[in-house]
Length: 150
Length: 311
Image (cartoon, rainbow over all chains, first blue to last red; front, side, top):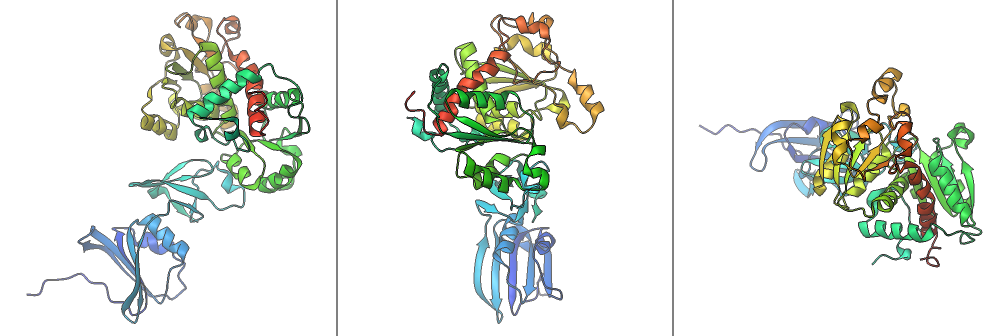
């Protein structure tokens, strides 16, 4: 008897986000500004040699912007982004949180000056595992589960 | 080796930007500047943008600048600045920096000084940004500790009162990680030192403990650093009153203290130090305020690149 497999359909053209931490797939989708009508396939809690369990998101005919890819890296560090054309992988790289960045997130400290001035937030990664960033202005630490995306 | 050039043109945003040897250099400079008056800063203008009330910080800076022959411009409350018309802080800084050689900034929001420094070509000095930091107060506190105790290293410092919103406490605790201090934190549970500060103490191996009973903490203190429970940080007046009187230092409690204990307070005080304590020989909080002029003279001269003549 053939071994049962879990499988997400192959993509002809678009973007694959693989090795997402289990349970983060939907959160990743929320930070991507998809045009209405975009076809998305998502696998949640799939078995994985690398992670034991993982999520996968496949987006047809869409390539992520730099900002979107950076947000995915903040949600699921070390995920893999592949660009697919004609069923072939034409580009593939790991998504790693930057050391420091502007925008992407909002400072969660209501007393921080960024909320009253028209400037993007500025952050420094304070810890990679578990992931946490620090607002460059008020120096408040923000753990990954409290990230609010800009 | 630290020299005066390491300070010229620099911003003073958080105490974390200063190493131990730089802090000690500043304290030595303050010693040399204490009696200095004259025209070292002739023709130089310092702008003070105070969006929150200030007595000691603003006046001691104005005194420092005036005694060195410079001049001050600025405002002492937000209502009379263009922010009342909706102007952003960034725009205010962009304009005012063209009128001055150095900018002093106090603001109720956190992170303000760092934002201002992004838009200013002149040095920016954080004079207090919300509950975040007050670095020049820390410099004054360190200087006072050294003047009153003869040293900074290895002292047992008891902080009491509002440790949650007290930016002077946050800045000083941060710096003490570089001076091998023992720290006792005395506060109501609601006003504990924030987690970020406690984590910094854990990471640097500073010995500390938290207590709620001031009287029990007093006997071990080399320094008692009292702080005001800040009404402006409370949205609920009833809650403020509940905590305000929680910690009052008086002569009765001081009977339990070491003979050489030094009593500090960043001021203003309300009820946390009884007036009967003022005559105590080691009640140093008014001297602490006065030392602020020496420290600020040295700091401004260093930031404007004018200190080498004196040092």
